[in-house]
Image (cartoon, rainbow, N blue to C red; front, top):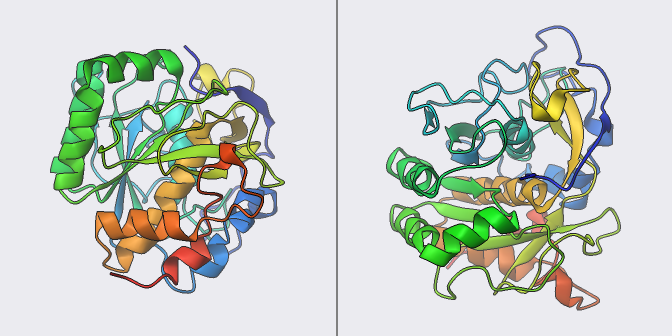
Length: 315
């Protein structure tokens, strides 16, 4: 089972040197999504400080130069240990989108430069996972201090299986009760569906392209879903050989998918968490400020606007 719709060509070679917090990221000009989301403008108000984003996925490259120092302790439910090393590549890509080290003179910028990543490995090297591991991963993240939980698990086979048993809805509800915002990818089948029970407290994210239009692969139809960039998204990849890096060991690359859109929204949620907003207030701010001027049904409520979200009134 594929976790993303496509793998694009390798990005520019990994920048050398340890860098500092005042050096521009050399690949920043290729990150069109940051500007589309108006994230740099939002950083004037908040950067996600003191916020932990759990990436419940395939793990992370724990030694990646753009992630090292950004990580907090996680867990590996596949191997049953505390070293959630990414053997696929998907989780590393998602992690970099959410909170890669920013202005360190290396690679890319993360959506929430002040946030930390909690890697929770629930999917194996082939991208597949067990129902129990995935639901336990969500609950574990919530119980271990995650403020935002990113679920880029939007593929039809995996998601349909989880939802059939209802266990994912229960795990998300538990996470919400612990104070975490749960952000989930809509999936990549290009079909209309309502994937979660209507009362499940989850923010579903579809994918849009560089023109702000719905990506052709993106699912749509979830209640109060929003959209975010998910086409040609540059982010971190493992610096060793995995499924996603067989032809690209640069440490960076482009992927397409709602899996890439979700962590951008998780980053916006992290900015709002820094503003001491509750999970319900965070979801409300993101939804109420999303933009859909042409009222395109496949965009849901619209494209997320980080600047407008951080400036939205509370309460």
